[in-house]
Image (cartoon, rainbow, N blue to C red; front, side, top):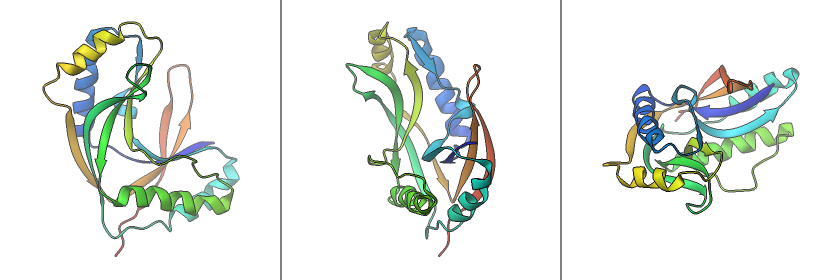
Length: 185
């Protein structure tokens, strides 16, 4: 099973991102766009694990807690690794302080199960598209510069999910396996 832990997006954020992608597609850049209905905010990519490890993973994640919900504001656009050599176009996220703490708790809960921690800092973002080539990147950058606003909404949530990801030629299919309410005082 290929697993990851993530926060869900609201319908209003998905609609705003769908509208944004529709506008950016007019630039005809060589980008493989992410389907908004499949978007989520990944907190931890677990990867391939045998099915018999599912219950220990669920039990470990059940202990993750925070005294308050996470607040996320979706705004601004950027590129990984850089604007001059873009491979990924992303929407930035301004998050409440407890988002990084939540991601760190998830890492800590899973490490005793042999799931390796990340070597880099957690940087919350939504991947909008992956560049297949640099063709018409300048058109895309012009389209982005012409946007009236790069704010896509706000959500507050007290729940994260364990997802299964199945890869196929048509794109990844995501299934929610378990919900984890994390707000506890």
